[in-house]
Length: 112
Image (cartoon, rainbow, N blue to C red; front, side, top):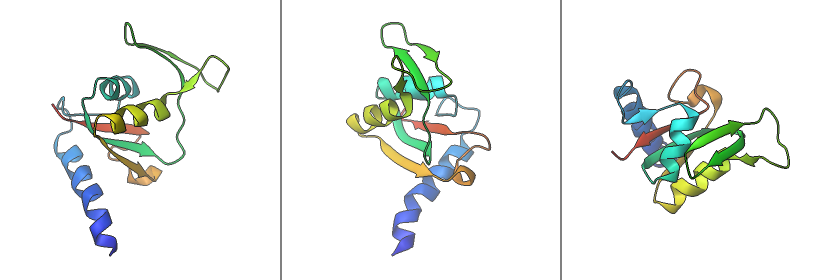
């Protein structure tokens, strides 16, 4: 039964790797989170246990990153997941060595 569940992630990983250096994929947190907000993400890869603290200004799409959680911060990974799910995106939680790009902690395949 396991191949049924691993096949979608393997296909998504291969698609990501085949489209490196194109606008269809990104591992830049700012780009990924903004794309989730606008409903552009088809597949969101998230490293297991990842939290990125900060604020995302939805008016001008700017980020204020916080090194640790504070009363003024939100978990921008949780925000990205909620946004991707709300727009029909697929979420793949991955171990660190399973992420599509060597040092990526969050990455996405775009719809367009």
